[in-house]
Image (tube, rainbow, N blue to C red):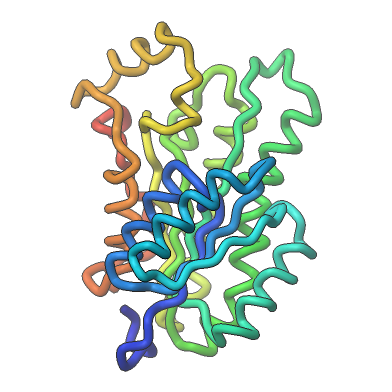
Length: 253
């Protein structure tokens, strides 16, 4: 925990894209320390989010969820004002919200491009800016942005997604430099091929193609990504900032 966070007050943790997949697993990692958890999602319905909330509250965790379009600057600011008014602080921000609209560039519509950049990249700006002043006043905080191996390597059919994730990497390094003197660390975790709902829909042939490129020879688990995210928010990572931690089984080195 950062120095400003004295006593035994549980940390306040905000996770976007927190209803399922990596976001849900990250929430469970923070549940182990009895953090107060705020999940943000934009699913068509609340089913997945309700399931995540239930699993957290059953562990005695103070958790809540909000359905917010994180690509909307106004809606994000309203959300964070609400969180600050009740909790008075935010200690950890995990920017995990993401979508795909995969297709080759020559077929990609302007809507495909704009939607992915808005949800995956603009949301990171929106949420980070919404917490930054408070973290500076607190003289501490941790931010972790979820990037992707394709932000580093590129991937056919994902020009929009790869651009958004590469953007997250550049954004992470820049904000890290801006706030390092205030006790705030800003890092990114770049998962490779991870077993989530997002990858479950891929054709078997595509999956096999991916697996053949991974030296460790298997998909990653959401838990392996969450462990890296959680470590970056732990006391042991106090001297780590502006980094992109790759969790990819050797797919990119």
